[in-house]
Image (tube, rainbow over all chains, first blue to last red):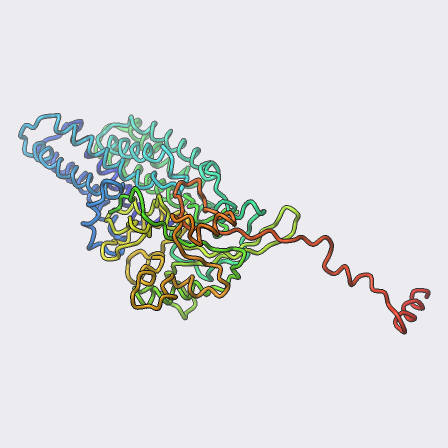
Length: 288
Length: 242
């Protein structure tokens, strides 16, 4: 799949933002007054920046309000609805921590759950697609949630989510590598000609790549996939873990660890798209 | 809206005969022409070095190596299969994609499409292409603006690709009616559904190439043992003795 910058930025920033907001909303970050204002601003800023980035690849962003209508069937519509509902739900909680008025803790816990539900909806946009076997696995929502939780926790000063994140990244890659073959689709089933013999492309249907090929048959960069996996794992989990354990708890430590984590998350998400193979590639002989 | 209808009265679709298709691409150009003039179907750099554009129908050519080692060429037009469980419809966030309850045709309401492309990702068959000029998704409409037209002559009230096919390889009809031409063709020829394991329940069927007779020996065999007569025969005998 084509690793479009808009969807990479969308999923990474909004995932991290909502993960951090979950910790803020749950009251796990002891902060008040203008400190609360700054941290809530950071969380909301990340979440909203991601959501705004998601509209950049749309053909008609001015019609984006229509995307709130089909929540009964569409995970993309659910994601839009839940994201906005969550941000609205968090308003009194954030104001309460900033301005120091009491608000029932259960409100904040529900807000934290809504943050994670938003991330789950984001992940399901991809995990629901049977056409992309690498995504159509339980590890997709698990990894998205792990990034949100581990990243949010890191920003809140906790390193404890990082080992689980590292483990899930490894499991996701391992299961993902065998997912396409496990789906048992090949040129024979794609064309229905398999019973006749071995199917090969004789001539492509068009001389220049079309939308389907550009969007879904992305081959560039896969040769560096193993190196990028090491980089993603190191930056997203190992470096922040080492920084948090080795250095004293200081805002600079948190900032450095978070930036490393963010870079690793971007690398992981680039791989998430670039390594994903769509079954339509079979018609073009992408996987003979 | 993007919920699929529980039942469609008709299941309109195509039966495409892979035995008859010669890969001439007439269906591709007829489709492009009709849909470009009726709704717009843009090209980018059509006469330049890197021509590209939205098409609703593409013709692939495949070579099949049969178990006996012989080769076979199959031309395969690929377009929307108007699936009963169309995943492209349910993923649509705006309600632009829908499947009609009356005839099962899968359509895009271009006024509601935001061009997010998720429906194209959800389709296993590559049937949807984004029109880069219009910013909305395009797909085969089964020529819904022809088949119900009161203005066109009766014989033209079929999809443009079917109307134009010079070999009669494309057939249009109602798969819900067991006595329709397409249903009878599909039953008689063992019509194929593409990637049925993905659960999309395609309506369109592909009629596989008919079995052909097999050559027992080289086609050149009759020419390898020529019995010469007359002067050539005399020369053959003399030369053989030298």
